[in-house]
Structure formats: structure tokens, C-alpha cells
Length: 197
Image 1: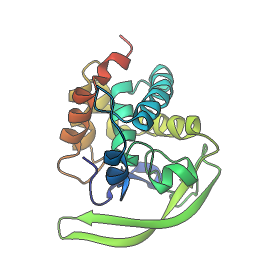
Image 2: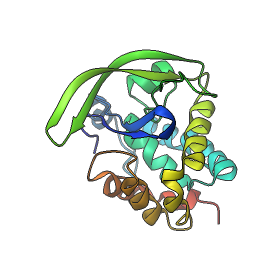
Image 3: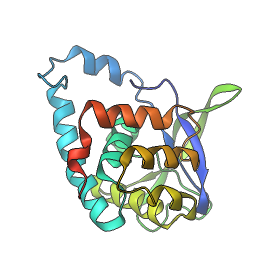
Image 4: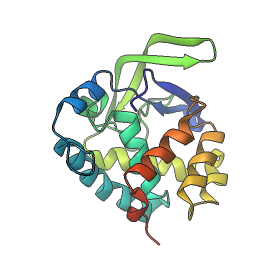
């Protein structure tokens, strides 16, 4: 379920967001004992914490909580990626020409893999560093709700699957299967229960 590379799309305001792989995260997660729902204790704890932040983001910015949770699960490998652990960056948000933006503390260079149609390559990217998980979720929600490229996704807020498809079509990530990956996570872990009706 964890992809092998980070797939990027450039969003307005010079911000890059995308799919961050948690190399080795899948192996560590499969070695731990699983609950009846198929989640390890660490995955369940991450899901519970991410759900609180996603519901808060939904109330404030309108992004369906189920989509936000699916994105952070996919982007960080259940919170185990180095970016999530060291920079409290749960969505692969990078610094643009204007720097860290209004929410992040600073920027930090880190190893990255960028994939295009011609393949994947190693690179260095400048990632946003946050004071807290809440700040990372708030910055993600702020970007999603203020960037005009995602307006068609917001027209489908009541349908998380349609929202995910429109988000992908708007260029959130270059992975051609990005929407399908999000939808699979939403369905498998019944994340729609976190959406505010």
C-alpha cells in the first residue's frame, strides 16, 4: 500500500505537495501484531490522532475529514516517514519561493524522490517544518481551501470519493492512481464515519 516514490505536483503559490513514501514503513508495520480491523496498535493510534486533526480541519476549511485522513496515511506511511517524525509535516508540503508560508516555522532540506512519466529520480527538496501536527493539518486545509485549482473538488465535498478524484484531476499529485489509492484507504478503514454531515 505504501508507494515506492514521492509523486509531486506544483500547486499555486509555489507550494509543492504530493505523495511521500515511507520507505521501510510498510515492512515495520507488517511485522507488528494486528488488531481484528487489520491495524497495528501504532496504526490505530495514528488513525485516532489524525482523525481528531482532520475533523478540526474539516470544520475550519471544509476538506472532507475522510480524504484528509487518507492523504496523511498515504503520504506518511501511517505517520512513520522521516518527514512526519522530524518536521511534523504530514502532507509533504514544501517551501516555495516565498519560504515556509504563513503557518510553518521554517524550511529544511531533505531527501526526496520525484516521479514523472519518464521515471523516478532522487532529489533534494525544501520541506516545511511545523511546530505541531495541528499546524501541518491547518496549513494543508488552508492551501486546499484557498487555492483556486481545487475549487471543483470543493463542489463535491459531500462525496469524499468524488472529492478525491477531482483533487487528483486538479494536479494534487502526479501519481495516476492517487485518487484510487485514497479511495481504497477511505473504504478499507471506513473513514467516512469521520466526515461531518
